Image 1 (cartoon, rainbow, N blue to C red):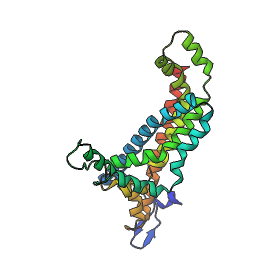
Image 2 (image 1 turned 30 degrees about the horizontal axis):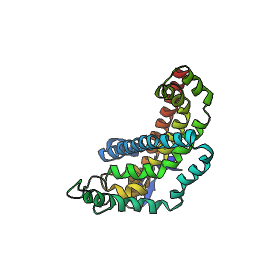
Image 3 (image 1 turned 135 degrees about the vertical axis):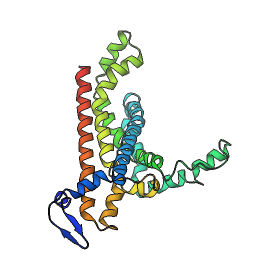
Amino acid sequence: MMLLLSFWTQDYLDLDRTLTFNNYREAWSQPVYRLLMLRSLGISLAVTFTTVVLAFPMAYFISFYGGKRKALWLFLITIPFWTSYLLRIFLWKVILGYNGVLNSGLMGLGLIDEPVTFILYNANAVVIALAHAWAPFAILPIFVALEKIDRSLLEAARDLGDSSIRRFIRITLPLAMPGIVAASLIVFIPTIGDYVTPKLVGGTDGLMIANMIQVQFSKANNAPLGATLAISAMIIVGGMAALFVFLNRRWLRKQS
């Protein structure tokens, strides 16, 4: 239905069901829509990279140093996420705000003279909030991939004189790559269409394509254009997901 709606046009309060590509031409030719799509893609990629970079050390620690308390560590990681998603986003507003916890702490330490304003109501705040929100979902697949690594391979490499860094690059990282790719997809796919977080902490500089889709469906009363933007976002997500999988397979082929 969404796909069919994208080929219709809005005629005041009625829908013109004549099939046309005008909505797609408008969606990809108007600078504001292109900007939002590119910004959404950039923010989602930044969130994915940040989340995976932060999640990997946590998953690595639990897998290799958690011992008999691995389940406890995983349980403790999920505790903060039992609270409402909206409550956690509002908490980031309190932390990053002009008179928030971060600014107050930096001023108290004498590191800054006045509150900084570049950490809230922009893309930076969206990346921080989303990376925190999706961190546990990235930790779990990476942890599973690390758990599947045969420890005897690492012991053999160590006996042959490989350093810890060399063992990590040659053995751990390649074998953990399926988990990294899975974590990347788990984070990337939903964050590119996130609506709530940009609305609450993004400001005008952090709005994403989902916010424009909501505007088209509600305030602008232009459902066909909103459907077109939604389909366009799905195409971008599908293309990036295929690219992730392709690069992962190419990486594994080179390693083998």
